[in-house]
Image (cartoon, rainbow, N blue to C red):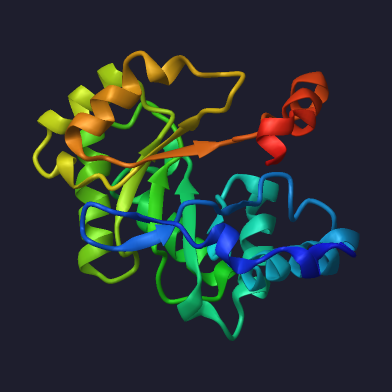
Length: 224
């Protein structure tokens, strides 16, 4: 924390242009494992606010994280500066049907303390038909509750199926596991998404933990 004054906002200034023309920081902040302990709340909010102040104005969360606790942490962090932050949240696959998706979204909005979510993702594929999820996502956009929607943990086969569904190509992002120790998407999924002009969002970009994470963060090139 004591060295944060040496970090420049320019380090996080690069943007990614979404398919609808919107722009978002190429480097954002994740909230997985936040909101699980009340004793950590103030610390976690402070960490997110620091990231925002440094220029990382994308925050990724989900109704799953901390059973909604991470969304509450995010809501506290963006209070008073909501228009400066790009908020991403995710819906459980079992909640992605026409009845439950609206309620899930509304509950997320309450926890986030906001009127809209910038990007709302299907967390992973479940038993709900994709066409039903697409329909309800499009309705949430029309209702102004979300700005755009996308998917997470979709492989090429999933994406091809999605693209065949009416308005399925309105998908804004595919969020998947991707880091220097897990590069499988480079062989098929990444080229497919590039061909469609679809941005790929990486989660756990420096791995989740353990020896691999230590090796990545200790690498001279990665540090640079």
